[in-house]
Length: 295
Image (tube, rainbow, N blue to C red; front, side, top):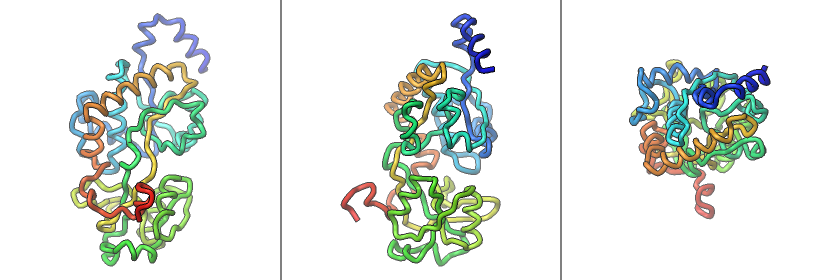
């Protein structure tokens, strides 16, 4: 079937092929499409200049879907985007991208996770630069005794972590926390925190004014004044084997450079709460990974 589609595309006039939509993969399980449409509220993604969250849940995925489209257009590729929900397992393994069956993902990935695939994937300039990604140690709001701990008290706490999330795993291993290894869904890990199987979990800071996370009507808050630096950068990846891969990658990288230069990327990351200015002065408990020699 793929051969037939490609053969037909070669038989079409160039102008017709140029106007065909670009198919971009997203994670099916996260239902980002619904929240993306809610955030747009009828607006074109190309017209978005305010990136403050208006929907519940993590907002960075929505912002990345928008920045991706703006970058492609600025890079000279003005095509309609069709988002294609796919099971997250395929995206995590990058198998479809490597094979050329998928063109591009709608969200950025850790650079460390795709090092072994650079022969098959184009890797964009960083969307999130090394040093910009920070997260909090979230605990149930009802566990008041955990809200205001000193760094020296972390050696008494347990934190759940998935060893397959390499960057999180390395970051937490450079703290005094006691790691409980668990391979499974994010929701199950949070349930372990809820039921006091473990004390805490590393989670992106919430976009709420209080940094409070509301998940299924259960409330969680970060331990005050403590944060974790995640030691890697994040990038978009494009398939080298897809027939449109090279052209899309060139447009994407050109557009990202322009968005970085005009301040849009920094603005989007800050307004979305990803770079959370509320925690600027909080203590980084694994600071030695950011500044070698500093304890």
